[in-house]
Length: 358
Image (cartoon, rainbow, N blue to C red; front, side):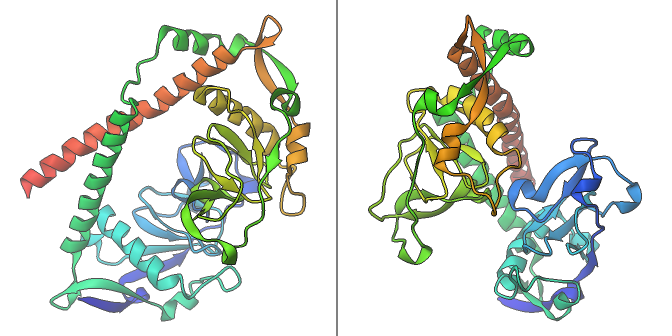
């Protein structure tokens, strides 16, 4: 059974503090700097700033202009006073699993009410309601907590299966990879033109939302959410090869290890002949140049801009050292996945103990 609750009856709602991005130094501290973005649980960077401006964690964060809703476990700084912080009044049940469940319920209730032109506010939310599962006329906290824990275990098992199937559990660096890392800072770099390396970039074709036929092919548009995949389509469109790199209208470069379609705001760089790890390295090199702030809504990045890009790459004996790029790419992947593998194993073991203690 579900019941509607007035949001302000069960949450204390506050506007967050206001710390503009122009006031901060990125990666200057250990406190999360939270913005109204969908990426990285809304955390843009970690900073050091005036402690009087900190917002309390173990709370629910709502992006005032975007309606992005996230759980903030730790105290944080906020970029905009339009953002809201929701503090569950029942402190006994203010746990992470319960608040994660509440986030989904809040989004489902609030999403139909607000948009970019009609954004949420502390005043407007006073009259809003949210639906929660209810037992004996009380919020079913045990159900909510157990649901999230079971979902986490299921996702961890899926992650474990993926890591095993892709052989990503092997995160030990080879001698070549360790050697490449040790020489990284001393390597010589030179500029190379993207078109001369990989030929002319191509672009997709515009496909309006209303014209899209549901299917299995990832369709790439501009944006960071879901790495730019806006839909899965079955239209008769150009299919681009896997192991290529896309650059969207804002200059954001991404590696694609699958076949896909793309709209006309996406440039495709044809790097099919390179290894996955070399392409991952190359993607970063392209992104650093293309995403430097030159391109925006008013000045889009197009395929012709990709052809004109000059990027820095490591060289050996006057030639691009693709082997070095490959070893660095593999080494970075292993270093990143190492923490994921250890976390996954730890959480799976903890979940087993929690289940046995029930």
